Amino acid sequence: MRPIRLPEPPSPTLGVPEIFENGGYSVIRRAVVIGNGIPGSENQSLGLIHALGLADNHVLYRVTRPSGGINEWLRWLPVSLHKILYHIIMRIYSYSRFIVSRGKKLAPLPSENGGSVGLSSILEADSKQIVNMARESYEKDGPLLVVASGRDTISIASSIKRLASEKVFLVQIQHPRSDLSRFDLVVTPRHDYYALTPQAQEQIPRIIRKWITPHETPDQHVVLTVGALHQIDFAALHSAASTWHDEFAPLPKPLLVVNIGGPTCRCRYGTELAQQLSAFLTNVLVSCGSVRISFSNRTPKKVSNIIIKELANNPKVYIWDGEEPNPYMGHLAWADAFVVTADSVSMISEACSTGKPVYVMGSERCTWKLADFHKSLRERGVVRPFTGSEDISESWSYPPLNDTAEVARRVHDVLAERGLRVRP
Image 1 (tube, one colour):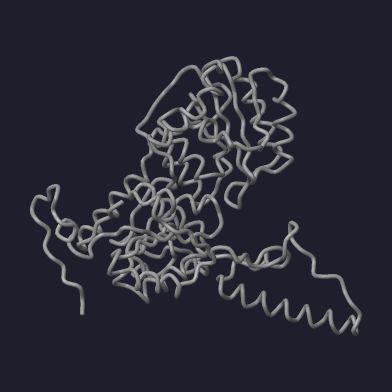
Image 2 (cartoon, rainbow, N blue to C red):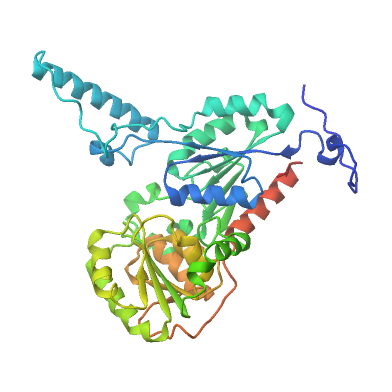
Protein backbone atom coordinates (compact mmCIF):
# COMPACT_ATOMS: atom_id res chain seq x y z
CA MET A 1 0.00 0.00 0.00
CA ARG A 2 1.15 3.51 -0.70
CA PRO A 3 1.60 5.76 2.32
CA ILE A 4 -1.25 8.19 2.94
CA ARG A 5 -0.35 11.79 2.21
CA LEU A 6 -2.16 14.21 4.46
CA PRO A 7 -2.81 17.66 2.98
CA GLU A 8 -0.65 20.51 4.16
CA PRO A 9 -2.39 23.17 6.23
CA PRO A 10 -2.78 26.45 4.36
CA SER A 11 -0.46 28.36 6.70
CA PRO A 12 1.89 26.23 8.80
CA THR A 13 2.76 27.66 12.20
CA LEU A 14 5.02 26.74 15.06
CA GLY A 15 3.77 23.80 17.03
CA VAL A 16 2.09 22.06 14.09
CA PRO A 17 2.94 18.33 14.12
CA GLU A 18 5.63 17.46 11.55
CA ILE A 19 3.39 15.05 9.68
CA PHE A 20 1.04 17.93 8.80
CA GLU A 21 3.83 20.43 8.22
CA ASN A 22 5.62 18.24 5.66
CA GLY A 23 2.75 16.34 4.06
CA GLY A 24 3.65 12.82 5.16
CA TYR A 25 6.45 11.32 3.04
CA SER A 26 6.92 14.41 0.84
CA VAL A 27 10.14 15.65 2.50
CA ILE A 28 13.65 14.98 1.13
CA ARG A 29 16.13 15.04 4.00
CA ARG A 30 19.21 13.33 2.57
CA ALA A 31 21.16 12.96 -0.64
CA VAL A 32 23.59 10.69 -2.40
CA VAL A 33 26.29 12.09 -4.67
CA ILE A 34 27.71 9.80 -7.33
CA GLY A 35 31.05 11.06 -8.58
CA ASN A 36 33.72 9.91 -10.99
CA GLY A 37 36.80 10.95 -9.00
CA ILE A 38 37.37 14.07 -11.11
CA PRO A 39 37.37 17.12 -8.80
CA GLY A 40 35.78 19.51 -11.30
CA SER A 41 32.95 17.08 -11.99
CA GLU A 42 32.26 16.14 -8.37
CA ASN A 43 32.43 19.80 -7.36
CA GLN A 44 29.36 20.46 -9.52
CA SER A 45 27.30 17.86 -7.65
CA LEU A 46 28.54 19.03 -4.26
CA GLY A 47 27.76 22.63 -5.22
CA LEU A 48 24.15 21.75 -5.99
CA ILE A 49 23.83 19.73 -2.77
CA HIS A 50 25.18 22.74 -0.87
CA ALA A 51 22.74 25.13 -2.57
CA LEU A 52 19.84 22.81 -1.67
CA GLY A 53 20.85 22.85 1.99
CA LEU A 54 21.93 19.22 2.21
CA ALA A 55 25.68 19.73 2.55
CA ASP A 56 25.64 18.14 6.01
CA ASN A 57 23.41 15.22 5.10
CA HIS A 58 24.80 13.49 2.04
CA VAL A 59 26.95 10.47 1.19
CA LEU A 60 29.55 10.48 -1.60
CA TYR A 61 30.02 7.38 -3.76
CA ARG A 62 32.40 7.04 -6.69
CA VAL A 63 32.39 5.15 -9.96
CA THR A 64 36.00 4.11 -10.49
CA ARG A 65 37.91 2.79 -13.46
CA PRO A 66 41.09 0.73 -13.69
CA SER A 67 44.03 3.11 -14.11
CA GLY A 68 47.56 3.08 -15.41
CA GLY A 69 49.15 1.42 -18.42
CA ILE A 70 46.78 0.16 -21.09
CA ASN A 71 43.79 1.51 -19.20
CA GLU A 72 44.51 5.00 -20.49
CA TRP A 73 43.63 3.66 -23.96
CA LEU A 74 40.36 2.13 -22.71
CA ARG A 75 38.84 5.21 -21.05
CA TRP A 76 36.57 5.87 -23.99
CA LEU A 77 34.71 2.61 -23.27
CA PRO A 78 31.71 2.38 -20.93
CA VAL A 79 32.88 1.70 -17.38
CA SER A 80 31.39 -1.80 -17.19
CA LEU A 81 33.01 -2.90 -20.47
CA HIS A 82 36.31 -1.30 -19.45
CA LYS A 83 36.36 -3.34 -16.23
CA ILE A 84 35.56 -6.58 -18.06
CA LEU A 85 38.30 -6.04 -20.64
CA TYR A 86 40.77 -5.09 -17.95
CA HIS A 87 39.97 -8.30 -16.05
CA ILE A 88 40.44 -10.40 -19.20
CA ILE A 89 43.71 -8.67 -20.09
CA MET A 90 45.09 -9.20 -16.60
CA ARG A 91 44.11 -12.89 -16.66
CA ILE A 92 45.87 -13.36 -20.00
CA TYR A 93 48.90 -11.42 -18.80
CA SER A 94 49.13 -13.42 -15.58
CA TYR A 95 48.79 -16.72 -17.46
CA SER A 96 51.48 -15.76 -19.99
CA ARG A 97 53.85 -14.83 -17.18
CA PHE A 98 53.23 -18.22 -15.59
CA ILE A 99 53.98 -20.06 -18.85
CA VAL A 100 57.15 -18.06 -19.49
CA SER A 101 58.43 -18.51 -15.97
CA ARG A 102 57.90 -22.33 -16.03
CA GLY A 103 57.60 -22.35 -12.34
CA LYS A 104 60.21 -19.68 -11.64
CA LYS A 105 59.23 -16.92 -9.24
CA LEU A 106 58.75 -13.60 -11.04
CA ALA A 107 58.66 -10.08 -9.70
CA PRO A 108 55.18 -8.75 -8.88
CA LEU A 109 53.30 -6.74 -11.46
CA PRO A 110 54.42 -3.11 -11.66
CA SER A 111 52.40 -0.64 -9.64
CA GLU A 112 51.26 2.89 -10.31
CA ASN A 113 52.31 5.68 -7.94
CA GLY A 114 53.39 3.25 -5.27
CA GLY A 115 50.05 1.43 -5.16
CA SER A 116 48.42 -1.43 -6.96
CA VAL A 117 47.24 -0.90 -10.49
CA GLY A 118 43.48 -1.11 -10.96
CA LEU A 119 40.41 -0.22 -8.98
CA SER A 120 40.12 1.70 -5.76
CA SER A 121 37.99 -0.02 -3.16
CA ILE A 122 37.01 3.25 -1.48
CA LEU A 123 33.41 4.47 -1.81
CA GLU A 124 32.66 2.38 -4.89
CA ALA A 125 29.17 3.18 -6.21
CA ASP A 126 26.84 0.16 -6.18
CA SER A 127 23.35 0.68 -7.58
CA LYS A 128 21.80 -2.18 -5.59
CA GLN A 129 23.28 -0.93 -2.32
CA ILE A 130 21.97 2.60 -2.91
CA VAL A 131 18.56 1.28 -3.98
CA ASN A 132 18.31 -0.82 -0.81
CA MET A 133 19.20 2.23 1.27
CA ALA A 134 16.49 4.27 -0.48
CA ARG A 135 13.87 1.57 0.12
CA GLU A 136 14.77 0.78 3.71
CA SER A 137 14.78 4.39 4.88
CA TYR A 138 11.89 5.67 2.76
CA GLU A 139 9.21 5.51 5.44
CA LYS A 140 11.40 7.29 7.98
CA ASP A 141 13.31 9.79 5.81
CA GLY A 142 11.23 10.08 2.64
CA PRO A 143 12.60 10.00 -0.92
CA LEU A 144 16.33 10.04 -1.65
CA LEU A 145 17.88 12.80 -3.76
CA VAL A 146 20.57 11.39 -6.06
CA VAL A 147 22.91 13.81 -7.84
CA ALA A 148 25.41 12.42 -10.34
CA SER A 149 27.88 14.11 -12.65
CA GLY A 150 29.96 12.89 -15.58
CA ARG A 151 29.71 10.24 -18.27
CA ASP A 152 30.93 7.40 -16.05
CA THR A 153 28.07 7.87 -13.58
CA ILE A 154 25.22 7.64 -16.09
CA SER A 155 24.74 3.87 -16.01
CA ILE A 156 24.75 3.60 -12.20
CA ALA A 157 22.51 6.63 -11.70
CA SER A 158 19.92 5.54 -14.28
CA SER A 159 19.86 2.02 -12.81
CA ILE A 160 19.06 3.45 -9.37
CA LYS A 161 16.17 5.43 -10.82
CA ARG A 162 14.86 2.42 -12.75
CA LEU A 163 14.95 0.14 -9.69
CA ALA A 164 13.48 2.63 -7.20
CA SER A 165 11.69 5.22 -9.31
CA GLU A 166 9.15 6.31 -6.67
CA LYS A 167 11.73 6.56 -3.91
CA VAL A 168 14.45 8.48 -5.75
CA PHE A 169 14.67 11.91 -7.39
CA LEU A 170 17.59 11.84 -9.84
CA VAL A 171 19.53 14.86 -11.11
CA GLN A 172 22.18 14.14 -13.75
CA ILE A 173 24.76 16.88 -14.32
CA GLN A 174 26.38 17.05 -17.78
CA HIS A 175 24.48 15.81 -20.81
CA PRO A 176 23.86 12.02 -20.73
CA ARG A 177 23.84 11.80 -24.55
CA SER A 178 20.58 9.87 -24.93
CA ASP A 179 17.20 8.97 -23.39
CA LEU A 180 16.70 11.89 -21.05
CA SER A 181 13.54 10.25 -19.69
CA ARG A 182 15.79 8.12 -17.46
CA PHE A 183 16.37 11.18 -15.26
CA ASP A 184 14.11 13.54 -13.36
CA LEU A 185 16.31 16.49 -14.34
CA VAL A 186 19.37 16.94 -16.53
CA VAL A 187 21.61 19.93 -15.81
CA THR A 188 23.92 20.86 -18.65
CA PRO A 189 25.59 24.02 -20.04
CA ARG A 190 24.14 25.68 -23.11
CA HIS A 191 27.34 25.06 -25.04
CA ASP A 192 26.66 21.30 -24.88
CA TYR A 193 24.01 22.00 -27.53
CA TYR A 194 26.52 23.70 -29.81
CA ALA A 195 26.47 20.59 -32.02
CA LEU A 196 22.93 21.50 -33.14
CA THR A 197 23.87 24.97 -34.41
CA PRO A 198 24.22 25.58 -38.17
CA GLN A 199 27.92 26.47 -37.84
CA ALA A 200 28.62 23.28 -35.91
CA GLN A 201 26.74 21.17 -38.44
CA GLU A 202 28.98 22.55 -41.17
CA GLN A 203 32.02 21.32 -39.21
CA ILE A 204 30.71 17.76 -38.77
CA PRO A 205 31.08 15.27 -41.64
CA ARG A 206 27.63 13.91 -42.45
CA ILE A 207 28.76 10.32 -41.92
CA ILE A 208 29.46 10.91 -38.20
CA ARG A 209 26.65 13.37 -37.35
CA LYS A 210 24.50 10.68 -35.74
CA TRP A 211 27.33 10.00 -33.29
CA ILE A 212 27.51 13.63 -32.18
CA THR A 213 25.26 14.36 -29.22
CA PRO A 214 22.88 15.79 -28.25
CA HIS A 215 20.59 14.94 -31.15
CA GLU A 216 17.56 17.01 -30.10
CA THR A 217 16.85 20.40 -28.61
CA PRO A 218 16.42 20.46 -24.81
CA ASP A 219 13.07 19.24 -23.48
CA GLN A 220 11.33 19.60 -20.11
CA HIS A 221 13.94 17.38 -18.44
CA VAL A 222 16.77 19.82 -19.17
CA VAL A 223 18.00 22.79 -17.13
CA LEU A 224 20.50 24.90 -19.07
CA THR A 225 23.36 26.79 -17.45
CA VAL A 226 25.95 29.24 -18.73
CA GLY A 227 28.93 27.57 -17.08
CA ALA A 228 29.74 24.94 -14.48
CA LEU A 229 28.09 24.51 -11.08
CA HIS A 230 30.32 25.00 -8.03
CA GLN A 231 30.35 25.70 -4.31
CA ILE A 232 31.21 29.41 -4.45
CA ASP A 233 28.54 31.71 -3.01
CA PHE A 234 28.41 34.82 -0.83
CA ALA A 235 28.69 32.83 2.39
CA ALA A 236 31.71 30.88 1.10
CA LEU A 237 33.48 34.07 -0.03
CA HIS A 238 32.70 35.82 3.26
CA SER A 239 34.13 32.90 5.21
CA ALA A 240 37.24 32.78 3.01
CA ALA A 241 37.77 36.52 3.38
CA SER A 242 37.82 36.08 7.14
CA THR A 243 40.04 32.98 7.07
CA TRP A 244 42.65 34.59 4.80
CA HIS A 245 42.42 38.12 6.19
CA ASP A 246 45.84 38.23 7.83
CA GLU A 247 47.63 37.10 4.67
CA PHE A 248 45.77 39.12 2.04
CA ALA A 249 44.61 42.31 3.77
CA PRO A 250 48.13 43.83 3.98
CA LEU A 251 48.89 43.25 0.27
CA PRO A 252 49.19 46.34 -1.94
CA LYS A 253 46.15 46.86 -4.17
CA PRO A 254 44.93 46.13 -6.72
CA LEU A 255 45.50 42.40 -6.31
CA LEU A 256 45.57 40.47 -9.59
CA VAL A 257 45.05 36.71 -9.26
CA VAL A 258 46.25 34.49 -12.12
CA ASN A 259 44.85 30.94 -12.34
CA ILE A 260 46.62 28.68 -14.85
CA GLY A 261 45.15 25.34 -15.90
CA GLY A 262 46.40 23.00 -18.60
CA PRO A 263 45.81 22.17 -22.26
CA THR A 264 42.86 20.00 -23.26
CA CYS A 265 41.67 18.42 -26.50
CA ARG A 266 39.46 21.48 -27.09
CA CYS A 267 42.04 24.06 -25.99
CA ARG A 268 45.58 23.14 -26.96
CA TYR A 269 48.57 25.20 -25.93
CA GLY A 270 52.13 24.88 -24.68
CA THR A 271 55.22 26.97 -24.08
CA GLU A 272 54.22 29.63 -26.61
CA LEU A 273 51.17 30.58 -24.52
CA ALA A 274 53.27 30.57 -21.35
CA GLN A 275 55.73 32.98 -22.94
CA GLN A 276 52.92 35.22 -24.17
CA LEU A 277 51.21 35.18 -20.76
CA SER A 278 54.49 36.07 -19.05
CA ALA A 279 54.99 39.02 -21.39
CA PHE A 280 51.40 40.25 -20.89
CA LEU A 281 51.68 40.01 -17.11
CA THR A 282 54.97 41.91 -17.20
CA ASN A 283 53.22 44.67 -19.16
CA VAL A 284 50.39 45.08 -16.62
CA LEU A 285 52.56 44.92 -13.50
CA VAL A 286 52.83 48.71 -13.45
CA SER A 287 49.07 48.96 -12.71
CA CYS A 288 49.10 46.15 -10.11
CA GLY A 289 49.84 46.37 -6.43
CA SER A 290 50.29 42.59 -6.11
CA VAL A 291 50.07 39.54 -8.33
CA ARG A 292 49.36 36.00 -7.06
CA ILE A 293 49.83 33.10 -9.48
CA SER A 294 48.54 29.53 -9.03
CA PHE A 295 48.98 26.45 -11.18
CA SER A 296 46.54 23.53 -11.30
CA ASN A 297 47.49 19.86 -11.16
CA ARG A 298 47.01 19.82 -14.96
CA THR A 299 49.59 22.52 -15.67
CA PRO A 300 52.52 21.05 -17.65
CA LYS A 301 55.95 21.58 -16.11
CA LYS A 302 57.17 23.23 -19.29
CA VAL A 303 54.44 25.87 -18.87
CA SER A 304 54.93 26.50 -15.15
CA ASN A 305 58.73 26.62 -15.53
CA ILE A 306 58.51 29.49 -18.01
CA ILE A 307 56.15 31.47 -15.78
CA ILE A 308 58.41 30.91 -12.76
CA LYS A 309 61.56 31.84 -14.69
CA GLU A 310 60.08 35.06 -16.05
CA LEU A 311 58.15 36.34 -13.03
CA ALA A 312 59.25 34.70 -9.77
CA ASN A 313 61.94 37.31 -9.02
CA ASN A 314 59.61 40.28 -9.36
CA PRO A 315 58.84 41.71 -5.88
CA LYS A 316 55.17 42.24 -6.79
CA VAL A 317 54.67 38.59 -7.74
CA TYR A 318 54.02 35.61 -5.50
CA ILE A 319 53.74 32.12 -7.05
CA TRP A 320 52.03 29.48 -4.92
CA ASP A 321 54.28 26.44 -4.50
CA GLY A 322 51.46 23.90 -4.33
CA GLU A 323 51.84 23.23 -0.62
CA GLU A 324 48.85 23.26 1.70
CA PRO A 325 46.92 25.26 2.62
CA ASN A 326 45.58 25.99 -0.84
CA PRO A 327 44.90 29.75 -1.14
CA TYR A 328 42.32 29.32 -3.93
CA MET A 329 39.33 30.45 -1.84
CA GLY A 330 41.35 33.33 -0.41
CA HIS A 331 42.21 34.39 -3.95
CA LEU A 332 38.54 34.40 -4.97
CA ALA A 333 37.58 36.45 -1.91
CA TRP A 334 40.39 39.04 -1.95
CA ALA A 335 41.24 39.46 -5.65
CA ASP A 336 40.43 42.72 -7.39
CA ALA A 337 40.69 41.08 -10.83
CA PHE A 338 41.46 37.70 -12.38
CA VAL A 339 43.37 36.30 -15.32
CA VAL A 340 42.31 32.71 -16.09
CA THR A 341 43.49 30.42 -18.87
CA ALA A 342 40.74 29.48 -21.29
CA ASP A 343 40.88 25.70 -20.83
CA SER A 344 38.92 25.47 -17.55
CA VAL A 345 35.16 26.06 -17.56
CA SER A 346 35.12 25.47 -13.79
CA MET A 347 37.81 28.02 -12.88
CA ILE A 348 36.26 30.63 -15.16
CA SER A 349 32.75 29.98 -13.80
CA GLU A 350 33.97 30.35 -10.22
CA ALA A 351 35.81 33.60 -10.97
CA CYS A 352 32.75 34.95 -12.78
CA SER A 353 30.58 34.25 -9.73
CA THR A 354 32.39 37.07 -7.88
CA GLY A 355 31.28 39.91 -10.17
CA LYS A 356 34.90 41.10 -10.41
CA PRO A 357 36.81 41.67 -13.67
CA VAL A 358 37.80 38.40 -15.35
CA TYR A 359 40.30 38.36 -18.20
CA VAL A 360 40.68 35.15 -20.21
CA MET A 361 43.97 34.07 -21.73
CA GLY A 362 44.03 31.87 -24.82
CA SER A 363 40.35 31.66 -25.79
CA GLU A 364 41.32 32.02 -29.46
CA ARG A 365 42.92 28.56 -29.15
CA CYS A 366 39.66 26.91 -28.10
CA THR A 367 37.52 24.95 -30.54
CA TRP A 368 34.08 23.43 -30.82
CA LYS A 369 31.73 23.92 -27.84
CA LEU A 370 34.44 25.44 -25.63
CA ALA A 371 34.81 28.28 -28.13
CA ASP A 372 31.03 28.72 -27.96
CA PHE A 373 31.24 28.96 -24.15
CA HIS A 374 33.76 31.80 -24.38
CA LYS A 375 31.71 33.56 -27.03
CA SER A 376 28.63 33.49 -24.80
CA LEU A 377 30.58 34.96 -21.85
CA ARG A 378 31.98 37.79 -23.97
CA GLU A 379 28.52 38.60 -25.32
CA ARG A 380 27.21 38.82 -21.74
CA GLY A 381 30.02 41.18 -20.80
CA VAL A 382 31.22 38.75 -18.14
CA VAL A 383 34.79 38.28 -19.43
CA ARG A 384 37.26 40.12 -21.60
CA PRO A 385 40.30 38.79 -23.49
CA PHE A 386 43.63 39.37 -21.76
CA THR A 387 45.83 41.42 -24.08
CA GLY A 388 48.55 42.79 -21.78
CA SER A 389 47.38 46.38 -22.33
CA GLU A 390 44.90 46.44 -19.42
CA ASP A 391 44.97 48.91 -16.53
CA ILE A 392 44.18 46.56 -13.62
CA SER A 393 43.35 49.53 -11.38
CA GLU A 394 40.34 50.30 -13.60
CA SER A 395 37.52 48.10 -12.34
CA TRP A 396 34.41 46.97 -14.20
CA SER A 397 31.53 44.74 -13.18
CA TYR A 398 28.63 42.61 -14.42
CA PRO A 399 25.80 40.54 -12.91
CA PRO A 400 27.70 37.60 -11.37
CA LEU A 401 27.07 34.16 -12.82
CA ASN A 402 24.70 32.39 -10.46
CA ASP A 403 24.09 29.05 -12.18
CA THR A 404 24.15 26.93 -9.03
CA ALA A 405 21.49 28.94 -7.21
CA GLU A 406 19.33 29.07 -10.35
CA VAL A 407 19.54 25.30 -10.79
CA ALA A 408 18.68 24.81 -7.11
CA ARG A 409 15.55 26.94 -7.60
CA ARG A 410 14.59 24.83 -10.61
CA VAL A 411 15.04 21.64 -8.57
CA HIS A 412 12.80 23.08 -5.85
CA ASP A 413 10.16 23.96 -8.46
CA VAL A 414 10.11 20.49 -10.02
CA LEU A 415 10.00 18.85 -6.59
CA ALA A 416 7.06 21.07 -5.61
CA GLU A 417 5.19 20.02 -8.75
CA ARG A 418 5.50 16.42 -7.50
CA GLY A 419 4.48 17.21 -3.96
CA LEU A 420 8.06 17.08 -2.65
CA ARG A 421 10.27 19.51 -0.81
CA VAL A 422 13.81 19.63 0.52
CA ARG A 423 14.16 20.03 4.25
CA PRO A 424 17.77 20.72 5.31
